Image (cartoon, rainbow, N blue to C red; front, side, top):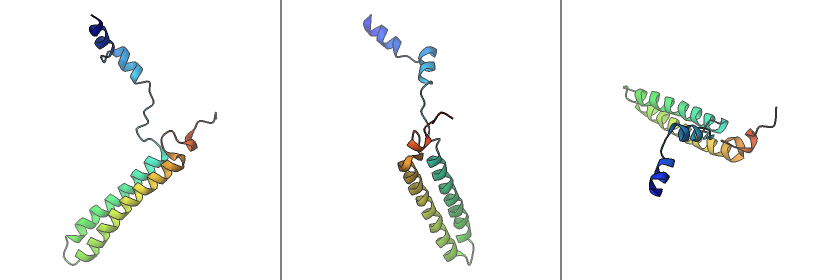
Length: 101
């Protein structure tokens, strides 16, 4: 009977689910995450365009170079996001605390 009580308490009942939903998870909704994603998106767009450009006749070398520049921009986005998180612009960071305004 005791095992039945412990399993029923850990089930995903509406009451348990509602209390779990009250926690602030974050999901990366911060200036650091948004900056990282936007920079990486620009790099991916450039690399995608360059991939198509490199497949056309006469543009292989320039397209290949542009592709690797896009990949490099994506890595820069990762580094910028990491640095912004470390200086306090990540989820729960010191620069984002509510100061009562």
